[in-house]
Amino acid sequence: MKKKITILPGDGIGKEVTACGKKVLEQIAECFGHEFVFDYGQIGHEAIEATGTPLPDETLAKLKKSDAILFGAVGHPKYDNDPTLPVRPEQGLLKMRKELGLYANLRPIKLFDELLAASSIKPEILKGADILFFRELTGDVYFGERGRKNDNKTAYDTMIYSTYEVERIAHKAFKAAQTRRKKVTSVDKANVLESSRLWRAVVQEVAKQYPDVTVEHMFVDAAAMKLIQNPKSFDVVVTGNLFGDILTDEASQIAGSMGMLASASVGDTVGLYEPIHGSAHDITGKGIANPLASILSAALLLDISFGLQEEADTVIKAVERTLKEGYRTRDIADPSTAHEKILGTEVMGNVVSNQIRMIVSLPVEK
Ligand code: IPM
Ligand code: MN
Image (cartoon, rainbow, N blue to C red; front, side, top):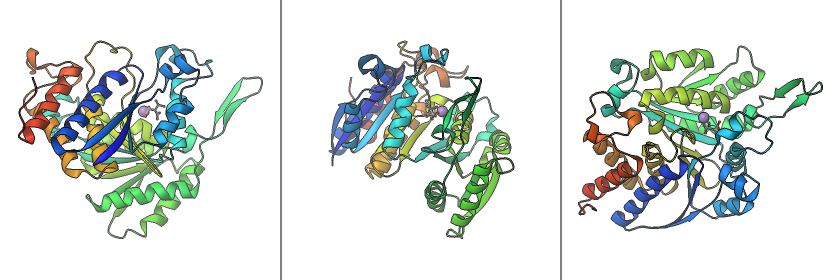
């Protein structure tokens, strides 16, 4: 199979982790006889510095011609504490999602058994948890009208959803549930918000077309509590952009660390694959970031955009074996982890990559 993959390393640890994601894709290409052609694009703070805009037209044009995109992270501390800056790295990511029609963000939350001790949640509550989030990605308060009034003394953002936006993400969630444990939890705030009441009515309508799937509706505050109290009670969760952003960061603790969670953003055209973590400037350049979220994003890319199930499973198995052998990055190490098994970003990527070779019975690289 010949495919074109564009890598957008972005800012902070984005560069370090996407290098590992790419390494794994190259290894898969070699082991399974595919040809993946890689190209790079600029986005975020780096693109602002180079061109003045967080998503240059050149990058967007490249993305539209790609078969899949592997994205790192965007962000820079200089913007975080200066809300007056008009051009911001995150705008590049949001524009990319909108322009490419990436309305469905899949965030699978699954704990590798080896990491049971790495989470701050009790193992008996965690063991067996397996949740698939569908976060709506191109609507909500992220894209509604916003502004200032009253001489700049009042600011507003509009939470807005249209029926078609809820329908298309709901269908994706129900279809996925049919291949899993056949349960969808739709999360909203319909006791307060009008946009949530529309959301709930539309999900109820869509649910009628999937009689084999059980649907439940939950308010976001209750969902936030239940995720930690009883994560095993969830199968597929479908929710809006803002609630999904917050709940999936919370849910990352079920998987041990933010550094473990991959995501896929899909919609009308090319798929985008990215860790849910951010640019993490506090650890940038130290070579200690966990590359597994980027590597697992590469597995989602192989599966969803290219339909390469066996290759995707091989990547996941390689990660599993790496963890089973005791290798950890710092964020997922627990007190029992031997010092010499705590690896840096690049070495962790190499270990996973070599595991892939072992799984397909090729000699490992030195
Ligand atoms: C995410 C991130 C982004 C979001 C930021 C960087 C704009 O937190 O992908 O979850 O809020 O969607
Ligand atoms: Mn987020």
